Image (cartoon, rainbow, N blue to C red; front, side):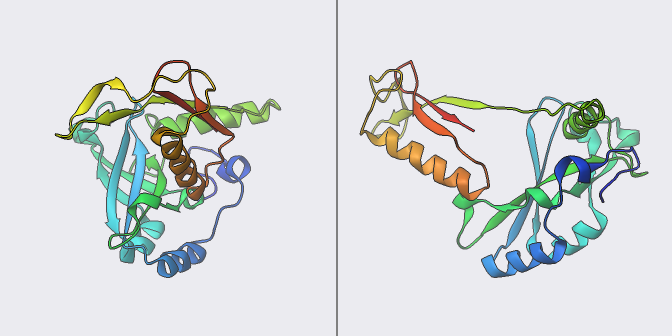
Length: 211
């Protein structure tokens, strides 16, 4: 669906994604068993519905119905019916869920029963604003930086209070954290997320990955 009844011209903003047949071929070639249909609530918390891969073609054609009244900030009980429309350009296999239960994920648009983009769907709100910016001749660019701390576990499996190292900003280290960062970068690359750099941050045990 290139353009919804709410008027968002997604093809102009997102470009051309893979066809359903290309996705079905990838599912078969990679042995995908399950697919997570993902969206976010108004607070930005990721929500997910997991479906068997063998019925994914039905969801591509008709969407996945959900109960919007059970999601904070969405709808009241009397208006609970909503459905998800998949954005095939976001389909990717989850690297750490390969194996017996190989799983992929696809990000979805949230719709009301009459086909309108749900006004409380953060993704829909964002793309409406992108459309307005495009009409004015502007392009919206984002450069996120993910900063996080790494901790070790004790013999009982509990997280230790202090971070794992004594490093500082841009310090070269050869401890386990440098390997963990590389594992994260490779996983992100498999999911189609381009990494610009990764390094130790200012605080002890603090790290950063730039997209």
